[in-house]
Image: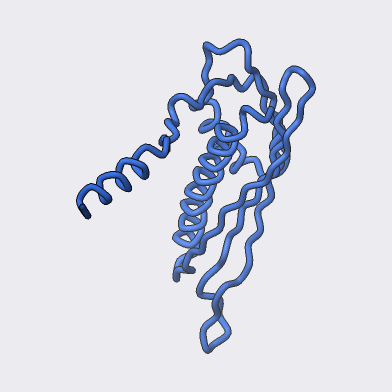
Length: 154
């Protein structure tokens, strides 16, 4: 008797209709134009990633993006001698997506991380550049995800 009850409960719960979102089906838009404001190096990485993910064959769903990027660099740690040992970098992008029918959607994404200060200035600068590249790629991925999830709202 318990086996039958368990089978009935299992069959009811397993047929819930849950479906995993397929990310390849979501890229049904073409980025026609991107306008950037703010940090040039960060915008360069974001632009390359966005254009790589854009569906170039789609002519019906064209999106125009306006991206405003801001970077802030703050001191995270100091040692006993009051020398800076770590910096914290935060990248925030505000995106306005415009569709052809004058529909607009605004959202913001951000990413942050830290890097260590080295004894040599050139190593410190390289650490900062690597972190900025990683954070820029992360921001671009978040923008793509947000566009994919909200393309039906546009």
